[in-house]
Amino acid sequence: MLLKNQTGKLFFFLLVLLSFSVSPCRSETLIPIIVKDGSNLTHIARDYCNSRDDWKILARINRINPPFTVYPGQTLQVPLSLLLTEKLFAKVDSVSGGVFVLKNDNTLIPLKKGDHVRPGQTVVTEEDGFAFLIFPDNRYTRLAGGTRFSMTYLVRLTDDSMKAEFFLEKGRIVHSVKSRLKRNETFFTKTPVSVTGVRGTEFRMKVTGGNANIIETIKGIVGVQASGKTIAVEKGKGLKVIAGEPPRQPRDLPPSPPLPRLASVYKTLPVVLTVPGLEATTSLRLRVATDSEGMHTAFEQLIKAGQQFTLMALEDRTYYGYLTQIDERHFESLPTGPFEIRVRTVPSAPIITDSLEGKTLFKKNISHKWLRGAEAGKFFIQLARDRNFKTIIEEKIQEESEYTTAELTPGEYYFRLQAIADDGFHSNFSRVDSWKIVEQPSLDNFEPVTGKNVVLRWESMGDGIVYDFQVAKDKEFHSLIVDKSGLVEPSFQFIDYLEPANYYVRVRGVLSDGQVSPWTPYQVLTIEQEPFGILDAGVALFFLTCLVIIL
Image 1 (tube, rainbow, N blue to C red):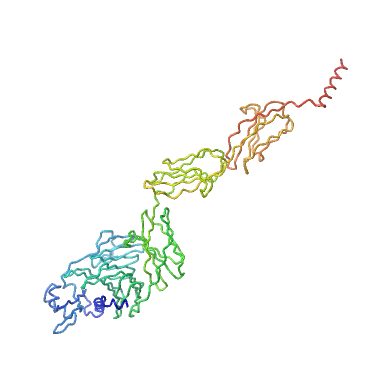
Image 2: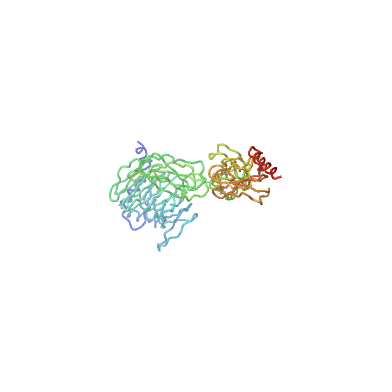
């Protein structure tokens, strides 16, 4: 039904398409002119050509015999050299990657934004090259990578109608004709195997090899002529034309793919996008544009279903993605999109310069320093007791790039921070730094003991910690009587008898990485005189008896 309703709209340029196959003059460029009501050959020559007498050439070229009658809606082929024309050009609105214009001597001149492409010139894009051309009267062409695209002619006639013809030798283009063409306007694209014309539409054209091309209609309707047959291709349908064969009936394009999984903002590169739930035979093309209308392509990426898009070369800005699905016959769906890909990597996550990396420490006040990156005005700091930052001890915003904790109790701690830009944007969190604080060794007050079999014990500091132990006769520990290192157990037993006196004892812990705690404050170990027992009384009585006998 839709095709039937569109027949009237397509009639005039389908006739023009057919005229390409019957033109008797192939040595020069011919421009199609639509005959208006009440017109004749002399009127056409008068209105469009350099001389009224050019009607004779028109009659010969178009095989019109006496009485030289023409009919409203009839298409005449007129040599470009005879026409009164205003020469037009395309403006290069954006380029990305390698985009060139091919000169007559086959040298390539780089194209840049603002350059003009004129009739007779060929635009060549490298595999990573993309270009967006603007033509007069709201007509645009987007060139993909690996494309070779020529402008045959681009002129405006005396009736203000625009005539355009292009040649796509290889690659992919998208034509967009925003406004419906006027009655005498034409916008044709040739390939090695077909001619395509539009009234007001958007469509893709792909030359997939020397003997075939594909036309896919995104909006409106497109007329395609090949091997003497003309056919209309509606929105959502595609047509493959093979050299030497008439075009077959258009087929439905594959369904548009679902949106990829998207983050609200990507703060690090690469950006990785996943598209779920597609058949293994499907390919996906992601086109990333710098504008929401999708005119200015930054780059494209093609993957197989089940793979991920990995986008590395992205500056900070908002991009717009257009996603299409390509089936096993190389037909491509209507695009899903635009969807925003917001990239903001500056300021980046701060880099901690003195990471503790899970160390065990004795000190209770921990300091951190970090690098100040570009656009980092302030920093958001978090200190927690767990790696998931559920139990927050402190969080604050500060301008300084250094932070020292309050006095911390023994246990595990986790630290991270974000950079904050002046507009309030928060970077990703830094890498989490962690450490463990253990209690420093302590000695309880010693009860006075006698000098035999003295054993001292103190609280364990934890697994893997050994101890240094010292006993001295003075508080400054100059006169050491015990100096032991590497004690595995938190205890020490005196082998020798200790004479009654006051001794000074201290201990410190040593970690496996060589860190040592401060010495504990000294404790006084008092060795008392042993009490006077029965044996001592017997010995004293013996010596006393001996003394009496002697006397």
